[in-house]
Image (cartoon, rainbow, N blue to C red; front, side, top):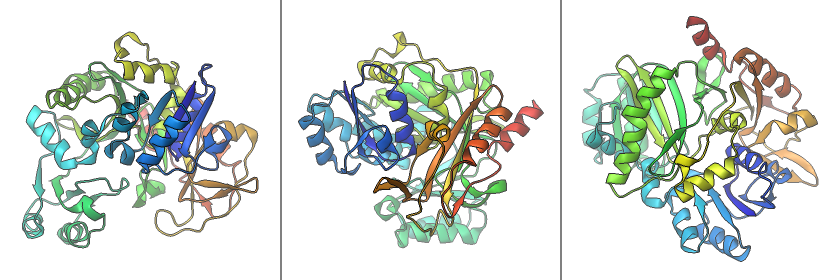
Length: 423
């Protein structure tokens, strides 16, 4: 069986390593993949947003199944075009991927169907937005409507920051056309939780919860990044909270999308905040999160490809989705200077033991050497019987991986350990 995976980051590497476990898989193509993924798949230099190129390749190489992992190709309709050519896919069609592609759409959906989220206003006019943030409660959250590489959200702690955020998004077009409209919403407080769910449009099967660490530096200091590490499960996500989320958020969201004739099939990501008033949706993603995938999938006991095919075939209710009773920790090694300016081209060395647990995000293969080519270079994941054990093992592995200008946070999981101790 030939499998195609669209994308080229750590998330895709985690998906590929898990899909490889299925004995029916004979070949995996990664488009475009990266230098580290090349150890586990055949990388093809076709970009993730080159939809025509992806479809042509899939057809000419008689691909049996496609997994479209990143947000951009999903929002551009990659799944629709592959399915039109008779290639079964994992991932939502274009009209369902809008749940991430437009924050205005997702906020209006939640409002219409009574799904708990922050109060908000939508603006397409710069002056109206400026007038609003000049008088609203501070802090306030300002979001570009469209996709912005995970960076289109600004938490303004002062009124000056709020005004600056509106101008940079709407006037200066910091995120291009994604900033034609903005959402301005109330600032919520409480622990954050990421929950990825498999859904075939009828059945919802949540994966194990996780806790991301977005800030670049220890103590949650520094700039926001794509994620510097994760742990799973998230200690704040108790059984009672999970039940409430299923009843008030997960199923209502899937049902709302069906009611809008936008049936969602794939991985629906719920970014949640556990507020004093109960769990609320911060954001939806139409795909696996990164780096949450790198702790969630290693804990999956069930065969990933079988579950994905059940989503495609709408037989998820009859398919087991089971996770280990264990903990996982992923530590991201990045290039010093990330997320702003950093140098590339440094050789990466690691032990064979570390390689087995490493998901490469930003590296190129040149003359047999693996060289850094991105800000977030790789993530290394360890599993343990306890969270403390998983964290210790992850850092022990991370310390055996070397490249010039490497840095990582040294406190991944510390917040989770404190939460455990408070229980």
